[in-house]
Image (cartoon, rainbow, N blue to C red; front, side, top):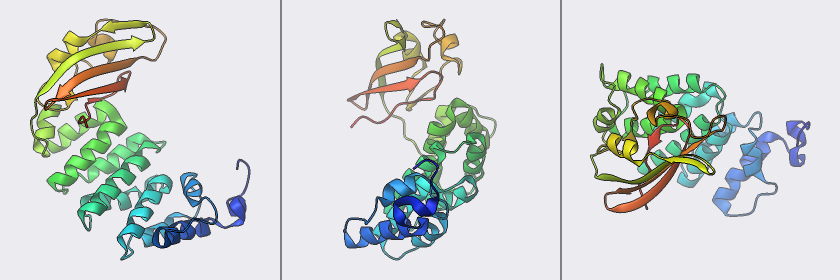
Length: 254
């Protein structure tokens, strides 16, 4: 598709891909062309019809439009998805909007600007909405973004676990079983450090945002490393992997 004009994709204009996709949601028919792929490639001109479809009376159409917006919306229109997260029509829309917002934020080239828009919505958001925005920011901006939330939501407090409590996350029993940091055969056991930093919330704040500093050195210089944690949360075992210096936000085990 490289080098081709939007209008040439599949022989249809961009807006047709969007309409075809939404029509298929209602009819359960197969699209005439791969509209989802077209949306994922951020086709120019798709935003306007998707914004209109997001207000459709049919819930499946609204959900499909929100998902497509998550793949196509630009930074300037991000408040549309934020508004759906903070003021959803129903719980189903809240879930769809949160997924779409997360997808949109992950692909934004200017993630600092994206974080600012999310932070701007925090003061007036409900507890449930703050929780959703917090989770999006955790995945987006790492420790820096969470610290910004702490300053915005918790006043002078910069305890991330305190912020989680303030936005509705309940304490839970978390046990660190094993933690390793490094890459390939160059790994070190950091269980003791991670275990010492773990509290009653899924965010683990290390002594420093820099993993190498927190874990007493670089086990694999010049290589991007990973932190692998095996844990037990509320009695269930889980495992998670984090890229070097990423925020440690343990997912709930299934």
